[in-house]
Amino acid sequence: TVDTLIDTLRIYADMMRGITVRPEAMRAAVLQGFATATDLADYLVKKGVPFRDSHEIVARTVKLAEVQGCDIADLPLDELREFSELIDADVYDVLTPEGSLAQRNHVGGTAPEQVREQIARWRQRLAHV
Image (cartoon, rainbow, N blue to C red; front, side, top):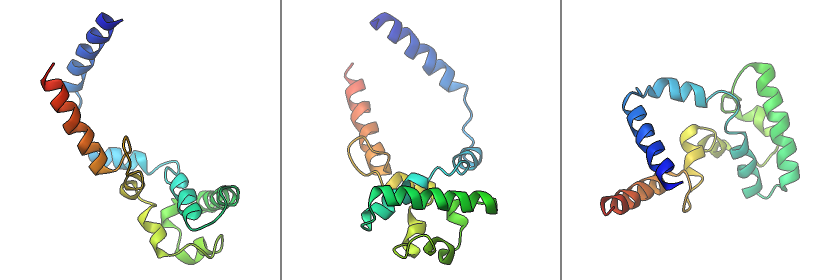
């Protein structure tokens, strides 16, 4: 198993050298499919909305965005507030890819500082291998 894993990692490392990162394409892809719907649900729960109700609010919000052919973040605040009076302008802070990542600021989370800490940790560990 270890031999297979090592071989697989070597192949993967070689494959990664041939990849061209296109940030614009990555951003466009992440903005499709209502990727921040869960963030809206978390936002509502933090505001005191029971999760079951939050889930229903998000479902209706996504349906409206689908009908209007836009993302949740593109809906005007007054339309979002029709679903919950607890939604304020700060909701837009979590309805972006950056805001979504930042919300998960815990060990193993996606917040940039967590990712940087893990990269540094693994670089240090791998330097001793």
